[in-house]
Length: 620
Image (cartoon, rainbow, N blue to C red):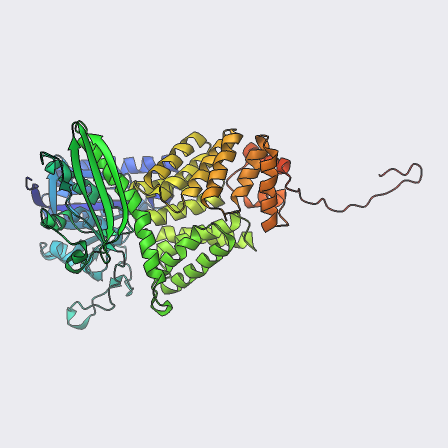
């Protein structure tokens, strides 16, 4: 295989602070603002420095420079101009974070790839708003004034970077540098002799490590080695976006090519917990790829699957296999990790373990399990109060508690859930689970789905194989007036993760979409499928009851209402109406009318004084 073409270059990464909130407040205004900044402050100035934009991401971009000095001078000038622009505005400021790194990149046409690109974006996320962050290797290239303008920020712990990074910050004149108190994720340089020393231990990355081994070519002619290598490369790239695991780099994995390997030895050699292995076979024009997920410690197979394609479209087959494995791997690994966490002693549990233990309770969709999940997440918050994962999952749990009528104080719980979602959003974790949980909270608790869609779509952009995000997209589309689009999103979620423990929620979502489309018999059918997948889930009987009643299936509808009242004898039409936030207008009226037809009682009318006239004894 040809060695990839590489080059050492200088990359500046830029990102608008709070872009999603700007879009939420004024979508068209924010887009006009970004275009104006690009036209006046970016595009006309790059040529002077020999720079060019290599990638844009809507709210930011990557710029390549021929030298460190060019990158630093341009970025300083840009941030100074942005500060002046903000000072002259009578509106909220638009601030940009920037980072500059020396980058060893892979060249592919006009695009740039490599770990250094991801590193630049991680450092940019740690930069102060309106300022610049640089690394030691960049500052080393600077002389005199540019170097002296940067102040030491100490050693930073950047997400997905397995070592502390020494960094320097710069801010425009008149803007103070941020205070940098030591935190678990940030280690500062003490003043003693100016020698960097770690103030606090770097928190370990507890996500399990996995490796995709080179696939075997089992074709009779042994002529599919290149295709097999492409499958592994595509799969490794796709799995690198799955936040539940870490993946060994492809180059390290390929040292095991054409070598008999005992997967249990990989745990010792590479420290991996999970191994993906497989093979490629060709018969005529048909290519078949088979893959297995193996637990390295025991050698046990956790999952296996296969995908067929043709020799005429190998790239599509490679992509399909990568998507298949990523979708199946997440629930399989999550289940194994939950079992591992449940075996640990209570006094050894970390935040990560507590979240894992909460998961089965979270997706059980039962009153007592939701309470258990909240209790475990409270423990996790005590361990790490700033964890975006814990904050967002607790918000989602509280949302379930409200909409499924389990809350003793719905107004209080709603305020807490929305506050937790906002706090999780401020952590800026580029984690599809966090983004999905934030979006789910806003979707459940708000009639307007616009804010929810911002976070759900961001989750899908981070990981297109995350079935939970597609499920929540289906609900947000349904409640936004696009139930047909919602059905497509739910079907995508089911296809991505056929063994997912919350697949039942996708079936409930399809039922919701059919209900909104007036297809009540289909809605009752899919509500039944959801209940079959999670028999103890009582809330879905509401959907089954109203759909069956409107479809004329009264025996089924009344049976569903009896099940609802068995759990909550005081349940009324008004109680359900008060709990539902994401339906309104005719859709909500029809939903409640179906429940009324099914036999769910209305609220008791207030007692009134009845006057009897002496003349005829009629009520007045």
